[in-house]
Length: 179
Ligand code: ATP
Ligand code: MG
Image 1 (cartoon, rainbow, N blue to C red):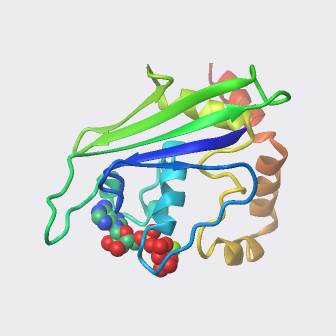
Image 2 (cartoon, rainbow, N blue to C red):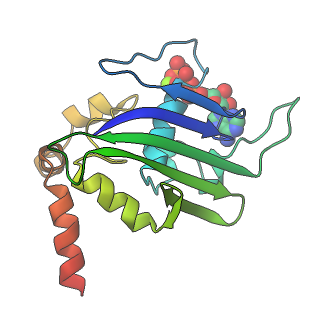
Image 3 (cartoon, helix red, strand yellow):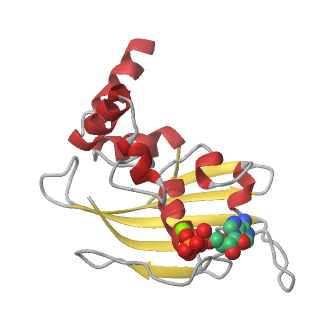
């Protein structure tokens, strides 16, 4: 699975609707301190279902919404979409789908896949099956390298399981056990 495009509106410092195409190969994000590089990675984790405000450097979920500056009023919502390309050999049929998450101040998040309203769980299963997602070891945030090195063996095992693509199976098994 590959991310082809990222769209943001009102997410953290990305107050204007912005669109980024991600070409095949290695992508580098460069810019001065505070220009929003980490915010971009957080947008990807957020749309994939990140549920912890702390790991998005906020105190509450509404903190991802543009908070305003001296010259611009705050926004009432944030929305992020990623266009995913599934290749042959990936889970499901080859093709594209767009996953969107939107949050409105005080009312929480809603998700869409290709314009259809879905549950948060549908989004997390989609990424779990593709062995990726908000906690994917493929998304290495600032400071994360050190914490991987310092991780306990059990924590490192979880990372390896995710990288090997079997955590989706665990999520489904847990689900089946609860029913
Ligand atoms: P560095 O090179 O220091 O790691 P960076 O490019 O990763 O910097 P970010 O941490 O992505 O920068 O961006 C920080 C900026 O985002 C700060 O200026 C901060 O004020 C702004 N920011 C974060 N949350 C919000 C918000 N909710 N509303 C408006 N601006 C925000
Ligand atoms: Mg940063």
